[in-house]
Each structure stands twice: as C-alpha cells, then as structure tokens.
Amino acid sequence: MEGRRFRRQSRVRAHTLLPLRSTRLSNTISCWYCDLKISRFNEPIYQFGQKYARYLRVWFSVGVGFSLSVLFGVTMILIWESVATLCLSDGRDKISDLFSSLLFGANPSVFGFYMSLTDVLYLVVSTVVSIAVHEFGHATAAASEGIQLEYIAIFLAVLFPGALVALNHELLQIKPHSAALRIYCAGIWHNAVFCAACGLALLLLPLMLSPFYIHGEGPVVLGISGSSPVSGYLSPGDVIVSLDGTKISNAREWLEMANFLEKQTLVSSESQVMKGSLTVNRKTYCVPSSLVEKSVTVLLMSNQTACPDEHFAFVSVPCFESSAHSSNKEAYDIQRINNNGYCLNSADIVKLKSCKSLWTTDIRSSCICSENELCMSPVQMPGVVWVEIMYRSPYSLQCMKLEKNLTVVESSDSGDDCHKSFLFVGDVISMARSVSMTSFQPRVASPFGAYLADMLEKILACTFQVSVALALLNSLPVYGLDGESILEASSFYVTVLSPGRRKLLLQASLFGGSIISCLVFIRIFLIKFC
Image 1 (cartoon, rainbow, N blue to C red):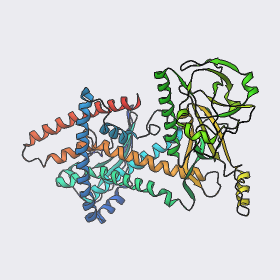
Image 2: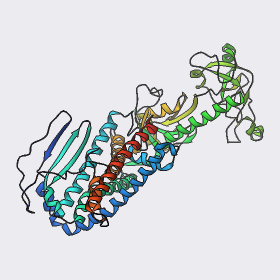
Image 3: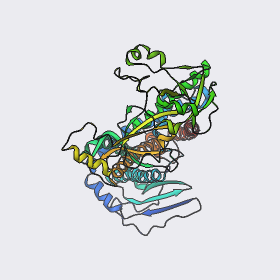
C-alpha cells in the first residue's frame, strides 16, 4: 500500500487551463516496476470539478486542516516510538498498541500470517476501493483548481501495489500554495471520510439488514476447517447457543469466551505448579461402578499422569444433597487431590449424565447418581480445557417441522431435539479459530443467506481498516508519499527562513522521518508478529 502519492513531476504540456485531449499513453514495464496508464476519466473528472468548484474548494479546505492535524499527530507518535526503539521505553505503551492496530489491524487474521483465501480477496477488494477513493480525491481537488489530469496510473513496484494521478507540474507551480495544499491533502481527507462512512455502515448494518437477518441471538457456523476437532459435531448452518454454560450472542463473544476459558485454565495450571497439587475440573459425571472397577488405577503426580491416549485421570468427588451444597460450595471450588485416580476414556464419560451437585447455582438440584454410580470429576491438566458447547440446527428438516408444530401446540419439551450439546476436550483457542462464524442469522432458510451478510460485514470492516492505514501511511513525513508534498507546500508559509534554509529544513525533516519510520515499522512488526 505504498507509493500512492500522485505524480508531481509529470510531462509538461501547453500552458492552458482548458481540458486537454490526451494522446496515446505508453505503459511502463521493467523487471521491478510496471504500470497501466488510463486517460479516459480525465474530462469527466475535470468537468465535475469545474462545475462544483466553489463547494469543492470549501470541502478540501476542511481537508487541509484535518490532514495537517493528522500529519502533526503522526509525527509526534513517530518521535515517541523512536524513543521506545532506542530502548528508553518497554515498548508496551498504549500509544504503540494503538498505532500498530491502526496500521496492521487489531486482528492478525486480517493483516497477519494465517490469512485464508477469502481474507486475501477481501483485502484486495478493500485496497482497490480505498486507493480509488484516495486518488479520486486528488483528481477532483486538482480539477476544482482548474488543473487538468494527464493520466491515472495503476502500478506495481517490486511487490507493492499503488496508484497515482499525473498533473501538469508547471500549471501547479503557478497556482497559490493554498491550492497546492488542497490538492495534496485531498487523498488523506477522502480516506478519512470514507473510513467514517464504513464505520457508520458497520454500526447500522444490523438495523439495515433486520428485515432479512436476526442479529445478536447466536452466531451461525459458516464453515469448519478439515482439521478442526469439532468437524464431526458442528455443521454449516448450526447456531451456537452457549459455551460452557455462558450464552453466546455473536461471533466476537465466541472468541472472547474461548480466550477467557483458556486464561482461566492457565491460571489454574500455574496455581497447581506453585502449590504442588492437582485440582479437579468443574465437570462431574455419574460413572457406573463397573466401569471404574475395569479402569486402570494411576498415581496422581503434580502436573502429570500416566494415562494412555484419549484417557484422562478421574477422581471420586463428594456428592452433596442440596441442603449441604449451599454451605460447602466454596470449599470445593478447587478440590485438592492427594489420592489415586482412575484412567477413563473421555469419549465414554462425556456421554454420561452429570452429577449436577458440586458447582451448580440451583439450590434445588441434588445428586442424581444412583447407588451403583460414583460422582467423578476429571483432573485438570495443564493446557487441557473441558468445555461444553450447546448448539441448535434451526434449518434442519426435523427442527423446521418442530417449529411449525410449535405454532399450534405449545410444549416445553418439543424444542429439546433441536438443541444439542457435546463436550470438547483440548486446546479451546485452536478449536474456536477453526470455526468460521457470522453474527447474522437469516430469517428464511437459504444456502447462501448467511454468507452474503458475512461478506458485506467483512468487506466493510476490512475497507475501514485499509482506509485508516492508507490515510496514516500517507501522513508520514517520508519520501514518496503525500506527506512529502504536504510538507513541501507548507514550508512556503515559514516566512522567517530563507528559501535555502527552508529547503534544507524540508530535506532534513523528510530524511529523519524516513529513517525513524523504517525503525518504527520494524519494531512494530517484531512486537506484533514475532
């Protein structure tokens, strides 16, 4: 996304302010650079700029104030970041995190190393649209000042794509410096306005799509990777109801809850290491005594067991009645384990009913295990999360028939067949990321309904991020970007210095800004991705 500053030193044409008919343009092709020059939009843009010149000048004058403010702010951030780069800061300040998030995205899956093919497509579309908005701002501002375009070029320098608008440099030189500033700042200003429009569209998207979609009542599964551990349970079209008993309203809460459970398990594991003991999980199951007798007895050690694959260590836990539960709940939130355990197959255990006595908040509950069953809980091992996932399949034939019947006969148990649950044991973060979801549920069953809403939401979000990054990049005081042109045009207002000293100050600022920007980008890259 570099090199989008429009070309200032283009070929010199006749000294006229009238629209010019472009002759055939020759495209440039080399081993490191190639471009495509387009001139068919010259006259339409010029006519539009001249027709609304009075309003456009006011519009772009506001953009000058905004762009200069952004350039000043970015320069201050660069100075602050340069101090951190010189090891005078620990590199974990909020300004650094904010700057890197704006440039590269808050979610590495958008600007990271594990992008899917669809993510790349969204990024390409968003980049093309953002660049077009940026260059249209330059071209329209030039047309409003009476300067005709020579051409619009789309180029690829090494591996970096970009675009530029070429203007008659001599005509630009005879214009007032205020006009040049309006032209140079137009691209940043248009990206900022476009970014605000995308943000507003994202906020209003649930309302705009409300006639066709339900939002915030459970994320819909769009796809599951082939290596996902839940590929045999969840299917596209399923709606997630809860994760470990916590209601999930949208796709963001799905990932946040997975992160919370992972951190909770990590804290528990660290506590085990410090105390030199093991703790039980919050899951309890009524295990038949015969199954326990056939199991392998294992001596529980700190942070390790000797159970074979797909087997976990279980221990017998007290099974309280409801009267004793309320007074002893806190004492068994973290149960110290100092005895032998039993190696049981998790696939067999998760199918059994829960004791529903240790950690339930319902005081009416009591132990439901029979005399021939033991209430058992798995030993919490480091890095292993036991989480119950409840979901429903609203678009399956069985559930659709049930919904039709519910409109005639109300039954508290009729909808139970649509709600299913299973227990996942393992890395919950990897599991959550392996499932693609959207927060929009189609009101009418459609094979592509959920995908359309998700596509629109992701394009708006990606375009918002790319537009922000494009505006910030072009605000940097470095060579080759809009920041160079803005500084050059602004330097003429520093009348206290001679032309020679102004030029020297400009070159020093650009050189220093370029060096600091490179160092800051390397530092942010290392902190964010390494």
